[in-house]
Length: 99
Image 1 (cartoon, rainbow, N blue to C red):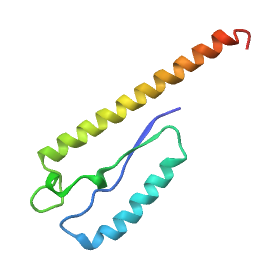
Image 2: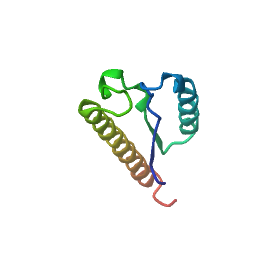
Image 3: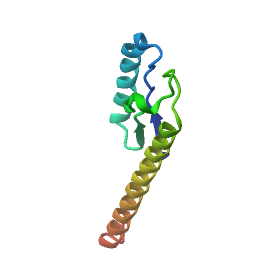
């Protein structure tokens, strides 16, 4: 199976009137990922205001650094999950070698 990372939509601090619509879309994105084993969420909507530029639309350098750390953590989780699945397959082959 292919692993997929879905990013939620960051809030628009320059246009807070859009936050309700963005929150709805983000909950739909999260709902889609809940039922799938190979879909991971990058929750950009949870990043605080101080990680945005002064106008509130784009991420600043600290925000971009935080996002890169979040992506790295997701990759580590995927790697760990794959490693565990591989280990389980090997165990089942040892336990049931003729299957």
